[in-house]
Amino acid sequence: PGIVLAILRPEVNFVLIDSINKRIKWLNWQKKQLKLKNISILRKRLSQNNNNEKYNQIVSRAVGPLKSIIPITTPSLKKGGELLFLKGKNVYRELEEAKKELQKYNHTNPTILEFGYGFEKTKVFKSILN
Image (tube, rainbow, N blue to C red; front, side, top):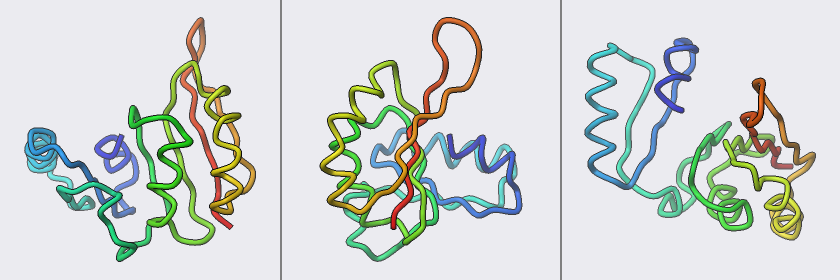
């Protein structure tokens, strides 16, 4: 979602992180083709961040279940920062299964937002770090 966000919000700087070289090459190509000046692209896993960088928001899609990605992403999130994860139809079950992690990592107001029309709406998990 980083390329689309960078296009929609040119006044905001984005850091796109991926561990797969093929996607990094594609992201760099897109950045060049679209002349995007507001993104940086890093080849690494967020879990390898070692708490060096803290972000206002972490946005992802298709990464894994909430109970697994909350412990990986939270150390890289600033206090008051948001997690926004595009999720599938099992998001409500995942939220229930992740309650311990949300409490342990001091997240408040976990919410599921739904967008779109029709049978399968887009679901976004949102949580704020206290």
